[in-house]
Every structure is written in structure tokens, then in C-alpha cells.
Image 1 (cartoon, helix red, strand yellow):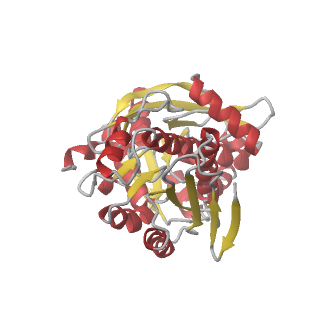
Image 2: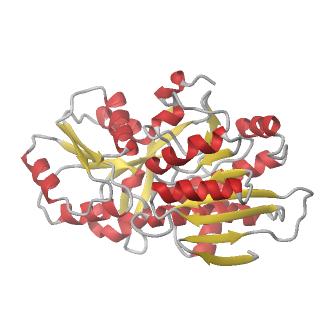
Image 3: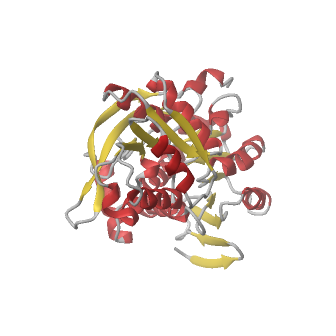
Length: 380
């Protein structure tokens, strides 16, 4: 990388290795690199930049800023990227409340936005836009797949828990949509909450036969550590966001035996995934999370589209993105009519790895070719 400079709350990385193509492409990344949940943004950034570096292209400049998980800061940074830096493409946002603060304005002003993580229902449905692509999932997908899996496994009275923000409400709605049964209760926590004593007491007093929870980042670490000491004994399930590699290593043995759903696993057998996992381990000396995989696929999609058109030719570049002509690390991948993925969702189990620490192991398929239910509301 050519330059590295700190700018207030942000981090600016410029990757331009000697312009090999006639027209440079500018990509603005706003992601969470500090505070609670920062490992999500760090992995998105590291996966994205690995793909750019592996491409060998010298005509792509990536500007990276830290949103500190603040919607007001994310909005300000997006305006700077569009007005001062004149970026062609934006990406990077982790949290759905930040996406809702940034994406609608970005795409209306003619800039492409590719989401490597956040997938709020409004952006998949009534607020879809031709310049907005989600490369990860729609927020409901992993939760809905776990609802279907738990129903098939015979659980009849699960209790559901998630933070009270757009991705949290989408999570529980998605679970219930495919679980298709009664649930014991629904608990909404505060975003960023660290003390779960009241919630654990409520779970203890319930007649639930299982627990499904969505608590990404530090929230999941705090909850799992308190759960381990609570003495409550219920089978635990969730999406990969509650059981990524960083979380389960921080939690320790309490995570072993839990099940989670993901569109990706580092032990998936395909050439693109092997190149990604090996490259990420070599570059960063750790296993990648699904966030790194999503960042990597987002960059690979952009690279595939740039082989066919420059973002200045909006119609041609948009069509090249829609074609999704790249080898995804997750295997099967295509866009639905609302430019969100149609993909398989898998089941992973947390097991003890060869190093004695918890890790995820691919178990099987939860649901095939899932598409979000909001596509029918999209009027593109």
C-alpha cells in the first residue's frame, strides 16, 4: 500500500501501485474500526484489501474511514467521500442503523454502494435502488435458515433474543417466518449492552426448550460469558454473527456444542475459498470470519465488473455487477431481482479445534437457494 495516514477518527488507506489502467477507480470504505464490534469492520477491511492486493491491479484507490459505529459520523464521512474525493463506489458499513443513515442518500446521488454486511429489510424492499447491491445477505436470511433447521430438529418452544435495532428486528422476523410455529418469548436488548443478568433471569423463568440469539460482536461475548456462569442449561442456536471465530475464541469452552447458520465456512471445499483462507491466514495469522469472507467477495465482485466497464458508464457497470461473474468463496451465488443474494445457507457446529480452542466446523445444509421475502416489494 502506498500511503497510510490517520485523520481524526478515521484511517485513510490509499492503495495505488502505479496506474496500470487508463482510468483510476476510487472506492470509499466506511466501516467500524474502533469501539465495540470493531473486529467486524477490521475483518471486512482485511478481506476486501486482500482481494484487491491479490488482483495485482494498480488503478484502484481505496480510501478507508472509521465510523466508530456512529450514524452521524458515517453520514458525514459519506458526504466527504462523494463531494471531496468523488469516489465511484462506496462500501464497508457493518451496522444496519448506519446503513439506513448513509445508503439512500449515496445511491440517489448516483454513487454505487455495495454492502459487505448490513442488509436491512427496507433496502431489500420498498427502498431498493438500482445503484445498491448487497453482497452478503438480507438480514433475515441466516436467522430464517436457523428457524427452518430448528423446526426440522424438533424444537417446539424456542425463546428468541436480539438487540433492538433494524438488524435485530429483522433477525427475529426472519427466524419466525421459516420456523412457522409458536415461540416461548421474544426479548429485545439494547444495542451495545454488556449486562444480561435480567435477560438470563427471564430465560431461566421461561418454559423454553431452546434459545436462539443474535448478539454480534462484543455483545455476544458478554452474553456467553455470563450465560456460562448462570447454570441455565438450554440448547443454544444462532446465526454466525453470534458465533464468529473471534467471539468463540473469546468465550472459550462455553461455546462448544452450539450450532449456527452461515452462508460461508472456512472449511468449505472450493478453489476460491481455499485461495482466500490461505491468503488471509498468511497475511494476518488468524482464521478469517464470515465478515472477512464478505469483504473479500465484495471486492471480487467489483473487480469482475471492472473487467467489463468503468463506473463512469453507469448502465454498463451496473449490468456487470448484476451478472456476478466471479467465483465466490461461498460457492453458489447469484443476485435476485432486488440485487440481494440468492444462496445456500449452511449449518456449522462449534467444536474444539486442533489447537485446543473453539472453532466452527461445517455440518451440512440448512436451506438451499434462499431469497428474502422483501424482493416482491422492490419496484426496480
